[in-house]
Length: 253
Ligand SMILES: Nc1ncnc2c1ncn2[C@@H]1O[C@H](COP(=O)(O)OP(=O)(O)OP(=O)(O)O)[C@@H](O)[C@H]1O
Ligand SMILES: [Mg+2]
Image (tube, rainbow, N blue to C red; front, top):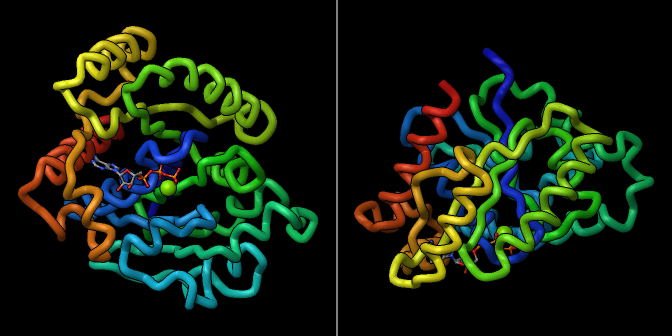
């Protein structure tokens, strides 16, 4: 088997849809026959909880893998064909004890290096740009940025891009921003349309043409421990994530 494509969902701004995208892209790619490993790399563990896993009760998590206390295979959980490397609050420890990780910024990269049975590894980053996020970006080939089409979106982008450039220079020359995903989109809002147009002008093809619309089912599904395809397969959310996944696959062909 080939090396997996490693994608990070990253935006240091909170609440823009990173976790919803990571989860539902993984689910959509799985439905399209791709083998996916989903990595929860946020101590908030929203991704883990969204799959109905009681994160706080877990002893084996991505943190114990990083520490070398548990093996990757023994820590991965399965949810309807998606493999998940779960997290919980333990992961926050890493920011205060980087010295305990001799591989430093390359700790996650080294732990994932032997994965050969997946076509995709999708990493859900925390809304921060610290040691955890650098670990995620150091091992990724591509970054997808979920973005809400709001007033400050463009402003935030310049800061985000310069941060990513720094990581690229120091830790990972292959890293590239290969996708911008418009999330929670409401076409009735004139501002959403106007900013979408601006982002399209500025970033061109990397802006996915599939837009993730504001859809209540996307917000509800996690409380049932389900992906959008399980919870509401006929919803706009399922339609949008399915379209996005087809676009992702096409880009990789
Ligand atoms: N398309 C959508 N329609 C409606 N609600 C959405 C949509 N996408 C995300 N949400 C809701 O918006 C909130 C933030 O989404 P999400 O948790 O995915 O963002 P995040 O960037 O991962 O946040 P954080 O930075 O805290 O990790 C959640 O309550 C989620 O359910
Ligand atoms: Mg999140």
